[in-house]
Length: 148
Ligand code: HEC
Image (cartoon, rainbow, N blue to C red; front, side, top):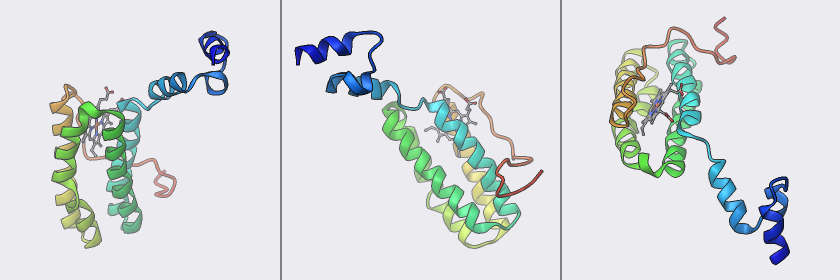
């Protein structure tokens, strides 16, 4: 035990192999994605969602909406300080967005998408990032949509 602790303290040691359980836990917490890591993916899915619906790839749109919900759940776990506003977002967007996608109706989808877009930006505003605004996406990057 003493030897383990001494090893973990060494700067060149690999904490994954020689760190104490506590050190490993501490490092794992440090290695959690920061909010902007999660949000970069969210931004990609936001664009893919819109264009999947526009191109009538409804199953892909459904999948994007599910993954976006999971990203918010991940945000809640990794960033407890965002839990309250994340729940407000989920309550304001889900399950309305997946329901609208299920209708396979562009008009209904755009209403739900607009509600979501507003809620995304509302959460940014509530968390001192109101300058992060989200226009309607002009294109999407997923190879599945093949828009180039
Ligand atoms: C729970 C609150 C919350 C919700 C909901 C939320 N965001 Fe964010 N978002 C943030 C925060 C906080 C940041 C700034 C992250 C940071 O500084 O670490 C951010 C940043 C971003 C960024 C900029 C990322 C970068 O670093 O360039 C994008 C893009 C983004 N969000 C997209 C979205 C989209 C799209 C939605 C809705 C589908 C959304 N966000 C919903 C809290 C939220």
